[in-house]
Length: 235
Image 1 (cartoon, rainbow, N blue to C red):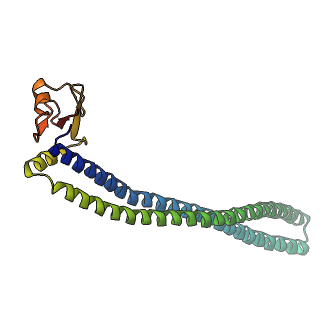
Image 2 (cartoon, rainbow, N blue to C red):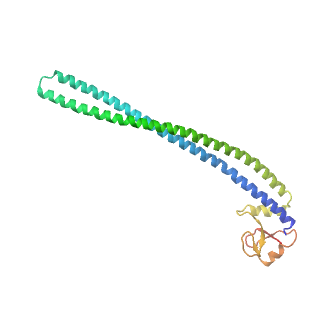
Image 3 (cartoon, one colour):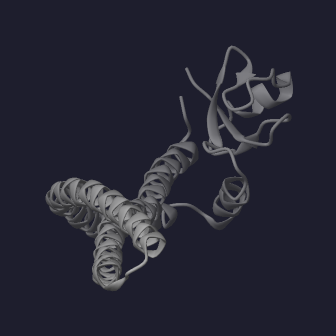
């Protein structure tokens, strides 16, 4: 059966573990919030990409319109010149230019039509993405709100846990606290462990007969001769 000193250390260890767990959870909250904020930023960036694609298509359409206009002006000029020439070869040359220019206008108009279809599709995608973005951001902001509430609750719980640790520490004498703090400063809680079948409950190695005997003495703190954890005997 644990001695009174061991029982006090077990209480301290339990409260310390609760405190450490709360600290770990509290430390994770800012990372979780940052992760959600990154999702929001990524989704906003994605819709900006869709917006940029739409703008590029509109710029392309405007450029084609300008080119069509310039080509139509050139066609009108060729037709006007054709009416004024007297020589047959000049007439035929202008006729060839007119045919080429008309073909160019047809190709430009076909390209413009494709761009118009692409603009309609881009607008549809942009509108759908905008609606989805609104819903996702609302969900993300709700998640952030929940995380901030959790952070406040954890801070309150941590304060209570710290007070509980302080209360448990006040019941122990200085030598016991120094030993506990030295062990607890190293990775590997718990540091106060029972002996099971002659083995340390921490490192699971067999303890010496002398250590086993010492643990049965009242109010005596004994450490494992293998891992230095505080060990105690359980009935």
